[in-house]
Figure (cartoon, rainbow, N blue to C red):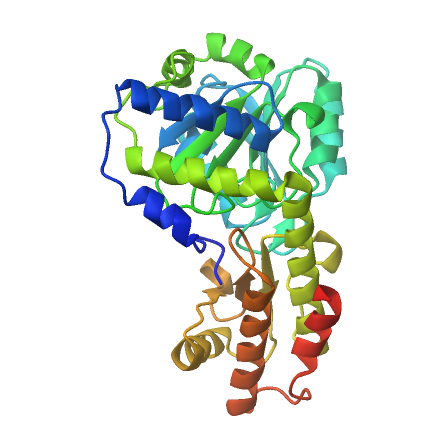
Length: 375
């Protein structure tokens, strides 16, 4: 029950276990063609979604270095570990970064982006870079509103880390006019780590033509040209492609709307359970991510609780990152997760709190609250 790697369906594991095939074979080209169609469906875009053998960080770095040039001015939202990572990446490539910062656990304020963009009368800002679902804090940022402000600017691109939002909540790339969307396989895609995905708008591809940042393995122009031929510029993770096709087929069978409803329901159930157990949510309830819920249990040592849940019930919860270590624990409800998993995790937390005499809430009150939502 962590936000990644997430559980993998047995049918996907079996698909991955096939013997590899040649990545220049007609069989593999057919596989790329089919998964490309599925990826466009998932991203709600008419543009190709490029597949990189690498992590979500590779996808985000690729999105940045393929659309920008050294010295470009960018706005970077930072309200958690991953937002702060993109600030570091942007600075590493010599970009001029203005950080739109919020405390960890608070959502980014779209109005702050609006103010900076409207003040840029010379249209020097080239991109707005942000994380949609901030995995470290359980906060979902208002990507739609921020993108609208970027569109009014006219010149800047919206570069979005959708690693824990894609496949969990609505991210209609074309409708929201997002320019770069990056994600990773070990989250909502329900397959092991190793693949990352980058979708680029026509506007982003125009920016690619002027980009002068160094790139080779992450040169998306190579991926685009080979994607048109149902291929890949380098040796891809062939077996993960087998799993990708199977997992995307499972998602197609469920349907996008049902996927989004399921994740929203699980988020609501977990939030209700924590509130009933008098365990404060770290993120505002109105901005809770559909993928993960962060809990700040006040006087309770979050690491002690996590270790006891793992030892007694074999359920792994995520801990706090950086300065939040020991102060929060995080419950992942992303990807291949069902109602049973949610109830088991909540019951395990309740039983652990009781055994450690860490909580005076009535036993079962969390499960009851979650059941009301799930029913």
